[in-house]
Length: 451
Image 1: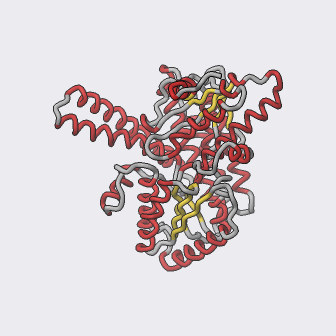
Image 2: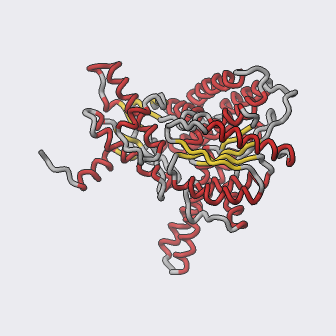
């Protein structure tokens, strides 16, 4: 039996985890944000890539079977998703099942967050199952603001990135439509049914329009959804306490992982708004601008002209990308806000200034804690009636958020609660949220809510 060396392991990682072309493959997308994942799949299909959002959470037991319990919870969920999908495909196709026909999409981040290790660990598990070593894992990294080089043909990268970013923004907006409509719906269940249909409609719209230069058809479809959504609201239902939701991006966005926390908040009389997915994309681009600026200054002091030129190029490149993203995001939000009053998104530079001004935390530390702490602070200053921090059990960035935001919110007299999840059901979990909502309602009665 051949001995497997560390060099062999690194070679496998580079050969089977990375930026591979998905052309001719079934491109498998794990569900994080339900709506955003389906819209992104529509974008891939619009560019001729057979893309599919995998069934989620049903394979949790499989994920747990191949993990120890020390891993970050989203790692367990997404591992279970891909294992269950492959198991069902093998059963469905029998002898016709060929693992090489599939490619699994699992992006990553740099820095101390364990998200950067998901695809590596998934690779190890897939390699331990006969045949599944042939399933390649396509990955993008926050280290270069999720550059698409190697995944999408060079001549299509610009168009694809524009449309993919638009799909993320539209996904956020449809979510915000749901959270704006559901607490005030005329009849129970109307909002959920409407949003399900809206998601299907917009997924088809992205499949149809993505590869074209003119994306106005997508915006027209979105405007029609906003118009219809407003009609579901009963204007006689009084405004409710407004709750800001922050935390780790996967668990706060994945309904089954967080046991539909927002619906529970609504059940006990609240209106909640979750942090967006676009916020993270903008943050990764902003971080590259910030790092390029630092590199430029350091190399200029040392008179390293070649490095100065490279840093300046990176600074301009990422600054233009960020500027485009903000313009695109603002345009879509303003278009929708002509028809219904949904909350706009944060600008990352504004969030950093809020931290610096109050000397609370630093973007130098990195991770989602930067966004969660600053967003909680902004919500509090705007008059939100409570803050919920959702995260996987043992998540380092979110525990940092808790250690800073909790006493900060107490000082500002804003109700705050940490809610961690690991797949188990805690008997007192709903009672804790109910108590929090009672405090939020008291805050609402005395302080009102944002205009």
